[in-house]
Amino acid sequence: MSLRARLTPLLGGLSLPPPALLVMFYMVVIVLGAILLWLPISHTGDIGLNEAIFTSTSAVTVTGLILADTGSAFTGFGQGVIAVLIQLGGLGLMTFAVLLLSALGIPVGMPQRLILREDLNQTSISNLTYLARIILVIALICEAVGALILAFVFVPEFGWNGVWQAIFHSISAFNNAGFALHSDSLSAWVGNPIVNLVIPLLFILGGLGFIVVGDMYQKRSWRRLTLHSKLMLAGTVFLILWGTIMFGLLEWNNPDTLGGLSTSEKLWASWFQGVTPRTAGFNTINTGGMDDSTTMLTMTLMLVGGGSTSTAGGIKVTTLCVLILATIAFFGRQTTLNAFGRSLGIEEVMKVMALTTVSTLLVMTGIFVISISFTGTFLDLAFEVTSAFGTVGLSRGATGLLDGFGQAVIIVTMFLGRVGPLAIGFLLATRSVPRVKYPAGQIYLG
Image 1 (cartoon, rainbow, N blue to C red):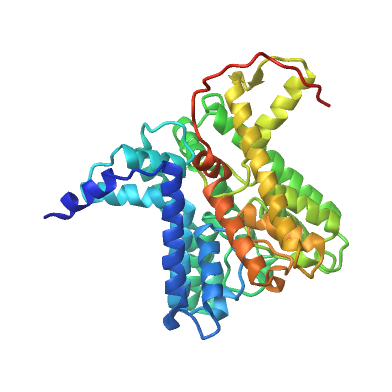
Image 2 (tube, rainbow, N blue to C red):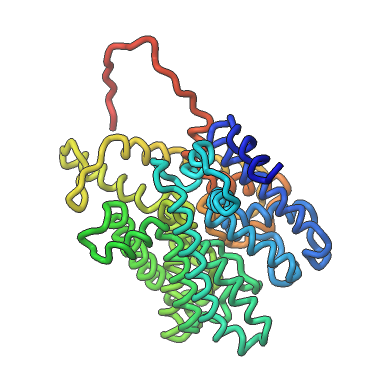
């Protein structure tokens, strides 16, 4: 029997709901990745099973939080496993699965399309296979160009090992993973123009979303762009400017971050740290040395995250935009939401409210549960949980202070942050038509 004949009944007979299958696929890949990272060939002898599971989860969820230094604790093979896990998690497991099925000549049926729709956060199942191909092509092109340019920095300094470093950091940056092969992330290149331009450009492109990048390539005109693309671009520009300017103002004289740098290095570092909380996770300064006000600013940016159908996490930029539009409409006594000559319905508002509510509850629950046994400062703990949920990877050093229970909570938080609160909500929700209709009531708000 051919491979196609064997796989078609199996793949076509999946009876679990798409969100449940999506969760299952991610869990399977995390377990397999953990087993590979636990093998002696993958590390230098300091990685136990809990570190392997934590690292695998962090890589698949493209978070970047670590218990062991990636560059020194893992061998070249282990680093390669991490890079593959980052790629799989960043672009979406079902994207690769659908492309593999197409390559084998196996029809992509309705069950696979439904799972892919959940993985890509789409509302329609049309053109999903085409979207999967576009995602892969865009990713490979961006990562290849990024690696080529970064090689001009790493190769002269590290020799041929610099080629691997360029490839690894390019993959990690585009997928918004934040994994670096140096214990201080990219702090050694705080004033390097190439690193400070290429790395942020990669994770900004990855964080915009493949729909937006494809729309920009096809339309090449602001007027012709879709409403989603316009909201994403406008929101992204605002958050980048806000993050960069505020970080520079708040940290300019802080001796633990920008204070000891030259003016040009301060500007580069402000730019880098202003955009990296958008789920990228790299840093060029000491994150633990930031003032409390800057820490809160960073946490806010981490919670927002990037765009839908992207490698980023968080509640997403468009969610924030719709929340702001809904607030403006409420105070303006408007019955509809309007933006860029288009209107938004009540369904979009309900969706973003549900997403924001679930996200806030998850973050607050994670902070509360870990705080029961955590011995560090509360702000560091809140920063860590927010970073985990937003799949960012920035840390103030609290990860290493967590006990086994705290690490387990962070693993769950990273997983939920990547799979998506809405997918979890759809998984747990029961859909039924009410048999009884009740008369309208009234409550007083505010």
